[in-house]
Length: 272
Image (cartoon, rainbow, N blue to C red):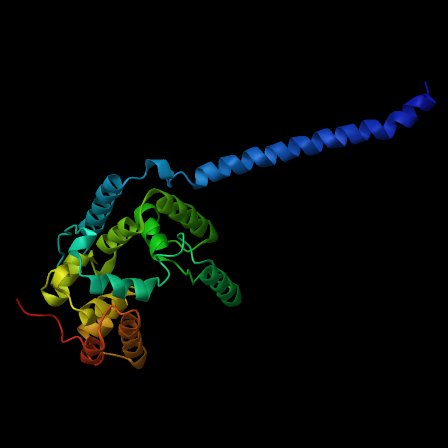
């Protein structure tokens, strides 16, 4: 039996209704799938409400000990936690100026540096440049692995945001300095100060602080270059001088101190 004229006139409306229902179903499927994917992606990133300095300090100590338990090579030093006020200001200033000059003014991310790094990654066709702030490095050390993928970077950004919401800048800096690697199997500023200078972190001078800051971007490589071989390349000399010059510019050290330290060189590991 042929369909009536009314059936054919109503035909487009029925198909439009079906299309809208299908589109709506696909939209909600996409939303729910995205939520599930994000929950899976961020399962290792605790919310800001669960982050406290006490818990994170315990986690940092535990993670550092796990790394040392698996380590081989140079003498392994037991990590010793130092509160920020037990660390010489010269070292703190040197690290901030060297690693993340805008640390106290940004909210965890340096977006200009991130965009520049993204452009460089696209140019190089590989994920190599991370533009990580001190907050990002701390979040990575606490919660993530060393992978270099867009997914891992997204996790790092979320973890950094949570860390900035939960802690003060000084607390983040304390975590960073006590977890950072300063050489092969050498974690934390207390161990680094003793290993390189046989001093407490409270007794370091500006040049010694700048030297330790110089190691941070690539501590194992720079330990081999500067400590084992004493090879001060022109670029490393310039970077050391730049750190000291920035400290002088910010009035963290005097002109006399700058003049005294600008030609400073690491003399080698002290004997016991």
